[in-house]
Length: 241
Image 1 (cartoon, rainbow, N blue to C red):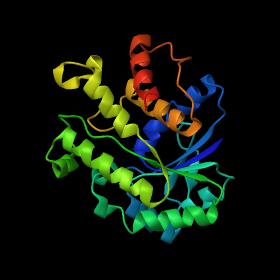
Image 2: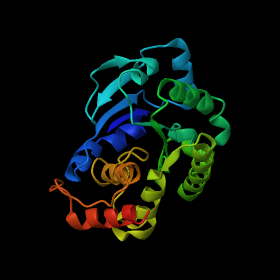
Image 3: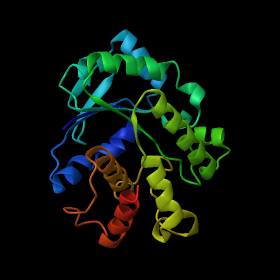
Image 4: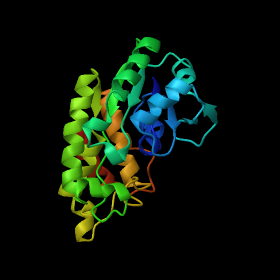
């Protein structure tokens, strides 16, 4: 399964453990993430128009191999899956999506008509995040989550894409698993207030991607350094989707 993500650091988070988790489930995946920090849909479209080699080509959750343009990446392989997303800061503001989302997707469909399209739903910031864009959501995690959920569902439907509900899974873990109740002394699923934690946050995103794209229930293998009880709680939430 050949997967290309036109993304940023949030798809980088999702890719980190995805190939390893897929292999543990007998699913062969080859991943490429196109990385520019904080890259919005508007920036993606501007990069398409300039055909700039602006992106780090990140294979299988690993560091950059070389620079590449979006058009070259689309023509690099016969992609089975292509994912798109909005930058986290405006993921809950639909006015920031268009016309750039439609323009980008039109290009994707023209160049890769056989690829299945997915929209990656990002997650709300941590409750005490200091990110400057948190003010757009009144520094309220619940409000940010609700707006991202609503907006991402509209965006996915508008382009005929399936939704990868990473943001919903992260918020459900925060709200239902005591160990991840950060506001009451639990672990944060973010490492800096907005990017996912290197362990359980990234694992939850990878499990959500695998569950959504491969369509099978998640088990666990090969993650011996993680607390198995916490992994099981994450898996229960993901499989309930």
